[in-house]
Image (cartoon, rainbow, N blue to C red):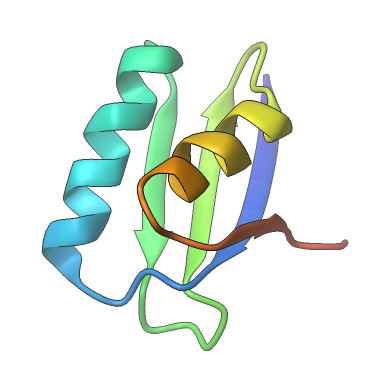
Length: 71
């Protein structure tokens, strides 16, 4: 089980809910959530076979900025 953490520019809860559903369709069985109270608007994905490039691409295609949060 891997955990990937991303910095985003998502600010609205309704947007985060949409993104979670979109990502779950790509990474079924994963645990995906946002921390919109954090200054980096954290997206956290826990699962197997999570592709950072796919996550960044999917968010970008929907008008959101997303980057891997360094350790």
